[in-house]
Image 1 (cartoon, rainbow, N blue to C red):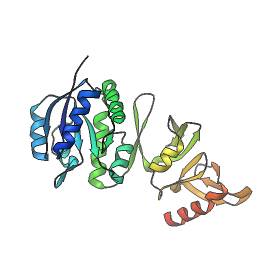
Image 2: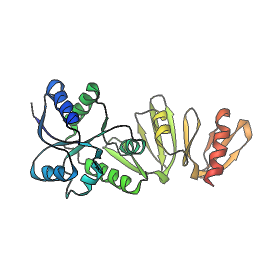
Image 3: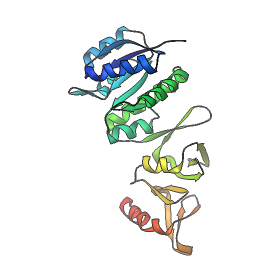
Image 4: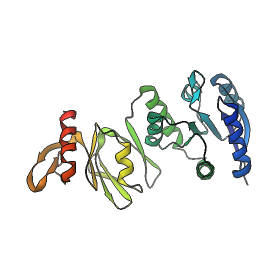
Amino acid sequence: MNRMKTIIVDDEQASRDVLKQFFSRYCPQVSVVGEAATVESGQQLIESLKFDVLFLDINLHEKTGFDLLDQLSSLDFKVIFLTAYDNFAIKAFQYNAIDYLLKPLIVSELQRVVQKLDSQLRDNTYVHQLTHLLQSQQQQQLTRISIPSMEGLLFLELPEIIRLESEGKYTTFFYGENQKAVVSKNIGHYEDLLPKEQFCRVDQSHIVNLRYVRKFLHEDGGYVLLENGEKIKVARRRKTILLNSLTQAS
């Protein structure tokens, strides 16, 4: 069994100890080769060791794990973020398909992440995902989303997404010039993820990008007419939400 060499950077000794205990008991393929408590000591450790995965706390005294990553010359390793609930950070992780663990740690979630790492350590798209995440944190604005495709990951700018349509557990993204991508997540996941000021769910199966709505039509209870000529039915209970969203977006 190949050992997964790991560094932990967390400003709480107790948290580092718990993580090491969990690795020892439940994830024997993980080998902790170093640990640090600050951005400065973490940077020195990372630049002096050869390793596969960094488990990185978001809050490091007066600084953050993002500050640490910004100071590194290369990001040739995987990062698993450790964080208490932070809405913007977590949404940024989800936008960029980056793994994270909530504190306090749950063994089953740690095992899931480690198992996923086993199969994805040499994923060449990861540097792009991490770079996009750092850009989002610097700008405090989420401008693109990563979705899984047959070839790997598809990075979509939010303004180029026209609409989403669901069928069972699958969601289809329609974007650009007659392009589409199918993902194996339900539409509710993306309703929670996409910004409400830009996207609106108009019925059980459809989310539309408000910038592409040309008209609201009253016929047969209500439709939106998109710039590409498509008509999407609006559920009665979502009509007021849609009209309020359109008014605020204009």
